[in-house]
Image (cartoon, rainbow, N blue to C red; front, side, top):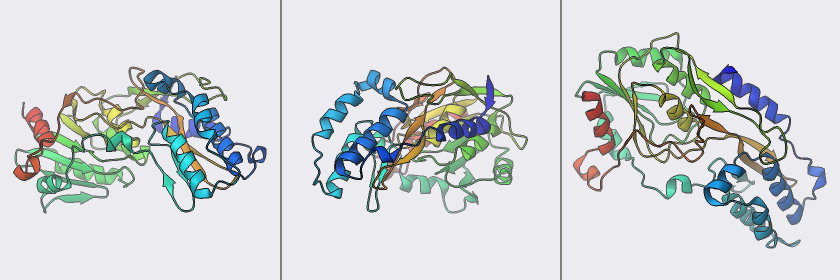
Length: 338
C-alpha cells in the first residue's frame, strides 16, 4: 500500500499512542516498583529487540536480572536514576532517554565513540562572512561555482518560500553541496520538505511499521513511504550530501530519502542512525522515559537504526584545520566538478 510520509507518520503515531500507556497502578512508587515499570514499558513497546539481539546479543530478560539485584527498598532517588540509566544504556539507542526533575540520562556513544569529521572553524571558513540566511539554512556560492547549503538542525524551520529563494540564488551553479554534518535531527516535515525539491516523480524511499502487541516481534505489515516532487522550485543537477556520525534521527531519514536519487552522492562518514521514531511513557514517580517505538527501513528494506553508509567515504585529516582545508567538502567539490 502506498502512503505519503506526512499522513503515514501521523496515522502510525496516533495508532501507537493508544497502546503506549502503562497502567501505573500495577506498580508502587518505590525503587522496585519504578524499576519494574520501566523494564516492562521497554519490554512491551521498544521496537528493536530482535534486531539488536542479532547485532550484539541483547537479551532483555538477562538485563532485568543483571540490574534488578542492585535495587533495594531504601535506594535513594539519585542511585535509582543511575541504575535505570545504566539499564537503558544496554539498548545502545540515542532515542532512549530517562528524564527526572534534575537530570536526563542519555546514550551518546553512537557519535562520541567515533571521529567528529566536522569542524566549526573550517565550516566558518567556507561560509565566510557574506553568506545568506533563509530561516534555518545558511548558503552561498563557492569560488568554483558550487552551491553550498548548511542545514545544522531540522529543529530549525524552513518554509517553501525560503527554499524557493535558496534554489533560485544557486540555480546557475554546476552542483550543490548540502552539509548536514552534526545535524542531530528534529522535525521530519522539514526533512521531507527539503528532500521533495530533488525528486522528479513519486518515489519509494522506505518502509515503516508499528507495534501491534506486547511481544517483541508483534508488528504491523510494512507500509511503503513515498515522496512526491515539490510543486515549487526544484533542483535537477548533481548533489552531494555531507554526513558524519552525528547525523541522527530526522537527519538520518533525510539521508535515506536522498540516497535513492541517481544524481545524489552521499559523502563523508556513516550516519549515527536513530531509525526509530520515539514515544514516551511515565513511571510511577513521574520520571519520563522516551524510547524508539516505530522502526523505519530504507527502500531496500534494510534497517537503518545503526546508520547509513556513504557512497564515497571521506574523513577530516589531522592537518585539515591548520591548512584551512575540509577534506569532506573538498571531496564533494571534486565529485561535482566531474
